[in-house]
Length: 199
Image (cartoon, rainbow, N blue to C red; front, side, top):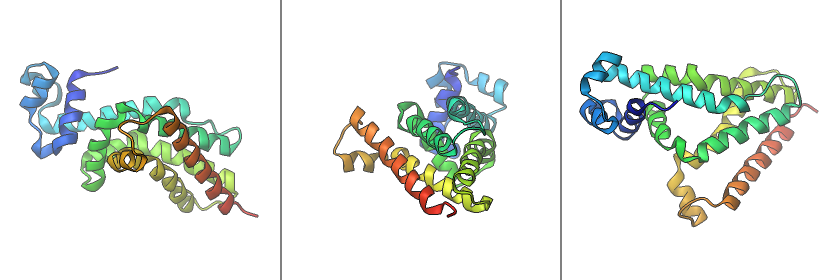
């Protein structure tokens, strides 16, 4: 469920960071009294952590249908999860989260722990488990590195959106662009897994 205050906070903190964002501007954007921030979150620092929780919860909810069960073909599970993550990262919904998350990646605060524990870890662990099942390898660290390369190729389409649009010579992604992105990512995953499979 959307929360106007948290939506405004994510946008402001994503644009300006914790130090630069103003609770007055956040309250005005949300159409609430500033005292609501103090009452609900204790101030700006508490609101910042709540914004991280909100992002993690929302990503977790969006990704839940794509998180595979342990049974079934591991390649299908990996492709389904990455396809769901790609769709989320290509959506406009993820735009304000990306700025917030990128700031936390570059200069982690206590909010990064909320993002990691609330959404990132489960996606990464699910992919790493799939990688081990698909390749027959048992090195968890190596599987996590492989899983990170899967996620990295998706994240470029959000974190480097301006470069992507310039490279594709588009103002907006067209349906054929989205299909091509999914196809390219899935082909890369198949190639990586085939190269890593135990013979």
